[in-house]
Length: 185
Image (tube, rainbow, N blue to C red; front, side):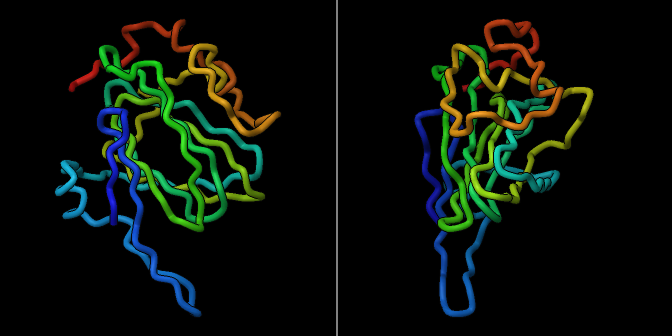
């Protein structure tokens, strides 16, 4: 398993070693000691899974008081994954990390607390998995607009399917600064 640091402090791409044969495949999707060696001593508290159809866009979500680190992967299908750094004082504040995750190479991404996260489905269906370092608290969920002007995310779908909640999040520039996390470098 390779755990690769990105230009975004705390954000890593995970490339597992996949063993394929005529029966299918096998790989380790998480191994604590590999993460600790990479400087990621994490305690996961909740696992989530969603199933979505082509064109569904979920996000961009975050929790402020109970920030969630997320280890995300696509168990089935293909998704375009987005992490927007919203940590005040971060050298990458307002910048976007994107990656395509799929069930072919089985790459994953660890997104630390302080990022707004979202994804859109590129295949007919997708099953998306999240390992979270904090429990989900609905009263602590906030969001940034999926089509934030400054972030200028190049979503690979023309007419995404969004929830009403996701349609009404503010742009990062319009978000109350008290509702943004601080960078803890």
